[in-house]
Length: 460
DNA sequence: AAAAAAG
Image (cartoon, rainbow, N blue to C red; front, top):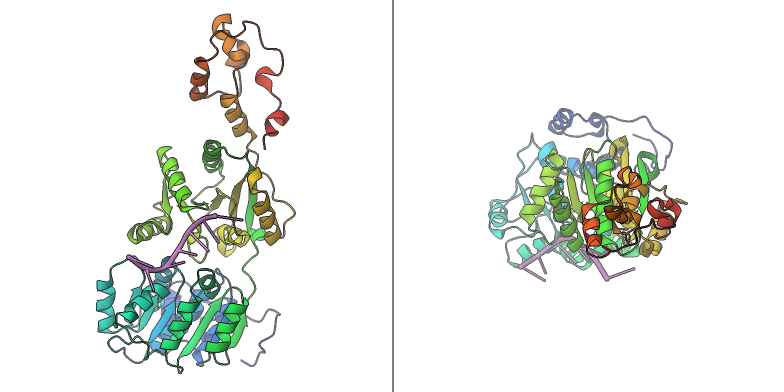
């Protein structure tokens, strides 16, 4: 254990049993099939077990959650909680993330008798109160609901032994920093603090300077960079064609190779609803998830998706970060994200743990700036285009003003139309039927049915 | 300009 902290070269990988964890935890790990810690676990767990504060700079997908869950379980193994005085507190920015952390506590703490409570919004206070009153070892919460309980006088944080802050930079994005400061001030200074953030902007730095004491700073490289395990594509479309965009999405889903399941990201909650409904109407197995939906529905949907009982999750950026949904084969970006960083988070839902992933994004000329920003953050010169010309041809064929095909209704059967590789939709034909019943009997001179692709592409 | 979280 004398290896230095700054060593960047690959060390011999330790096993979990070498980290000093309680045997009951090791048993739970073995049962889950884990033998070797990830780099952040290997570095953070021994420090945390020594009782040091930890500042972990790591992204999702690095095994960050277990790097605090395991030492917290270890520490709580002895002792017992008193009413309304939790022994540990884990703060997470979103409800789903909090729920996910609680699952890990259940998984790795299965051989311990730890009591646990999840304090998140959107669900009734009654159950949460009852648990607090009985006393909890592990309290997992989102900041808003935690403070709410505290203000009602149902909760004392003065008995806290360990406090964990997960995804601090995201809390910053969400305006939780003042809440976080308030919470810190409610806890005893004797507590141990494990603090995790993917980045260290000044506001976060200030917070850690103030509330962490001589922390072990542990920084791990990003998980496998996006480019390595994820095939990225874009499909270009003209602006302002909502129906076409939805058709293109369906096309991408239908033609996706080895599609096991996928997340479809939209920028707006309203759009999430629209797209989910549209997909359902077209017979796709899809459900929406975003912050305005009832928590029960969110939980149910996410669980279905994890269990494989749901193929397509249509999501706002509530699902972009942090959520651990193993085995997502495809990510579809219905819209180019407004913050380019979100692109990385979104596509990071696929290609995890060394598996191959696919990410496709619909891009319109309106997205110019946002798309440039995506290129910038990914460090790519360009993202390869996915060929959807067949779809665009179809679409243009159906929507374009009538051509010679229609004359044939009077002029008799037309071989060319019958053999057209570009079938026009019924909808398109009906529209035209009312208008040009008296069109010229002679074939139109010009491109006719065979508009060259380059002309159709001018639109985008 | 969006979403998230306390209602």
